Length: 448
Image 1 (cartoon, rainbow, N blue to C red):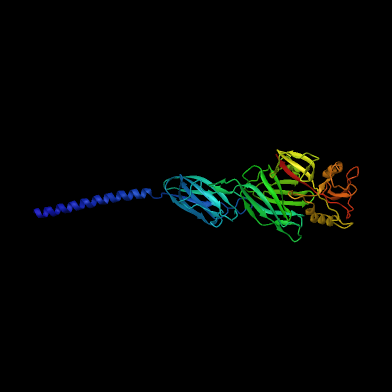
Image 2: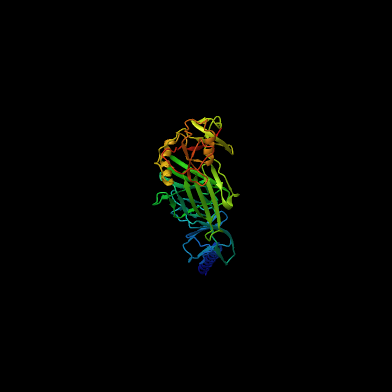
């Protein structure tokens, strides 16, 4: 009897132990279930078949953050795909970056991502149709939250640049835009000193240079955007720069068209067209070596450009003196920079035959311009009407002038003309002869 009771006690003890273990196992299992996902975040993108709506740029990389920790990274490949992300109840921030592929951008991984993550353009790559958005969601136990991402375009689009009547001696022409944002930080911009230079291609006529591709750019990082036209010739590079108070923003479509003449510089028109992105707006610029001049409806919006390159001197040369042998025709000040107009100490005749037409004469003048250039000074060009009048008035003070000969200049309409300096006023002759004289002018920006 005692032996049986002993076995019974052992059996009862074993059952009690098993029952205890089962209770503990049930408790652990319950705790694990409570920590598993109990909600669903359903994410999809919005597209439209109408041109006025914003279409989504794919792929869309979706980052889900709980606080500062990224808890999910998934990709929407196209408009047919919907993400179903299992999460625990709570608050989440959802960041979406559209149009950014790993080929063009450095994208953070799930373990690297933070709400201030950088989306950085890879070296040597160009921006795509980049989009971004941020949303906040609150998930409840057992619920499904449907989140539709409305993407915001982060770039503007340059689709055409055409410059006409470029000198045939030009070996390269480009357009530079600055300062531009360079990258994204979260859904905002970062790195504010970017520039973008667009190289143009010479067309069959030899005088037109253009870009007709497609270039996506992050918008300017300053209220005043700067556009520079760079013309490279054997004698050096001449750049024409203007600033505009009209602000470029993401979604703008930019077309730039311009016309160049050796005599008066460049006339450049930049248009920003809504193109079913933003409302239409047009910005126009007329500028030459004397600085930027706004035109049309933008006369109050645009501001003359301030010279960015200058020569440091002990003293600004006075009118009537000489600088590197060149006669100083005028001196004007622009925001602390003195613009000194110089008449070259060199001149040249017999640059074309008698009775040459204007086109032939201009081509010959362009070829002869380097012969009249003074070393160390760039931007030599034909005199305009006001400048040849200064020469006429000061003819007795300027060395090496032949007052009985006819000197070349351009009138207010940009037409090539000749005038004898001994006349009582500047005339507009246009019967070109081999005795006509080229004597160019240039502006040197100086600061003391």
